[in-house]
Amino acid sequence: GQQLNQSPQSMFIQEGEDVSMNCTSSSIFNTWLWYKQDPGEGPVLLIALYKAGELTSNGRLTAQFGITRKDSFLNISASIPSDVGIYFCAVMNYGGSQGNLIFGKGTKLSVKP
Amino acid sequence: DAGVTQSPTHLIKTRGQHVTLRCSPISGHKSVSWYQQVLGQGPQFIFQYYEKEERGRGNFPDRFSARQFPNYSSELNVNALLLGDSALYLCASSLQGAKGYTFGSGTRLTVV
Image 1 (tube, chains in turn cyan, red):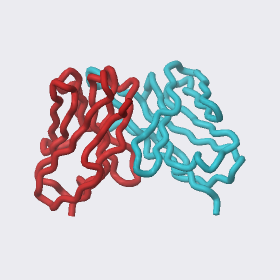
Image 2 (image 1 turned 60 degrees about the horizontal axis):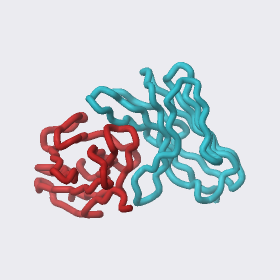
Image 3 (image 1 turned 180 degrees about the vertical axis):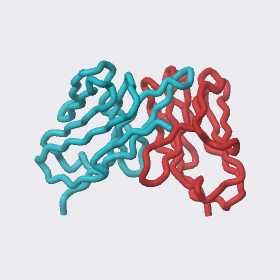
Image 4 (image 1 turned 120 degrees about the vertical axis):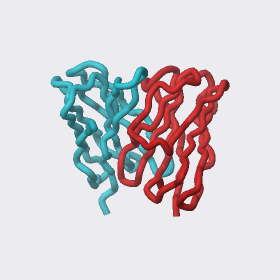
């Protein structure tokens, strides 16, 4: 089946550091999304990207939709403790009539000990 | 306004048993989708319902079934539970389709 390759799998952050993660696919997708999931909760949408090459910001978060439509990255600037959690990339799959999401395996952000 | 409500929040079942999970969508949302999230993985699509009809199905065995009621709430049923069915089951609602999903907090199912 279709897969999204998300990296890194995990990373440790120190408050104030910038963070970068990315997601690639072997297939073209026209909608890319980034979600954050906290323990015991469902994923929450952070940024949605609809146009190849598009760069979109949401506060300290910036995401780009790759020009080939096969990749996306998410940057977090000046990280704070509440940024800890699992970040998922996802793409909209229109195989069914109304579409569903395909998720990556996630990038786990933890605080440096 | 209430978000997507799922019940129960946790449950433990024995292999071979049957389970029913419930989801109430955000008021006004007519589309409900179900996802399975195994520990350490991203959510995986199971079903999508819109206006009480199945509109999409993921790669899951026939032991998994679902339905949507006239009030747009939904049930996910799993028969003949296997240990591998242990996961967080997420419900998402939207006005239509996968755009604008809001996820619930999930039901944590443990099969022993």
